[in-house]
Image (cartoon, rainbow, N blue to C red; front, side, top):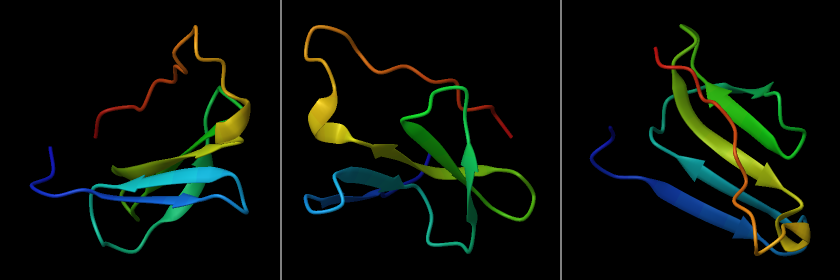
Length: 69
């Protein structure tokens, strides 16, 4: 796990982004349409983003599997 994480919320874009690393990476789809994982060149998960945050149901958690490196 990272020593420090960075979290951004963009109210206009309605998304939340969490990064475990400042390393260069790219977004990759997950099985859940609301979640994108951010991976580095080796496929290691270095963060994730949640799209449509304001539409999430408060009664149920949002779940997605982020594969281990």
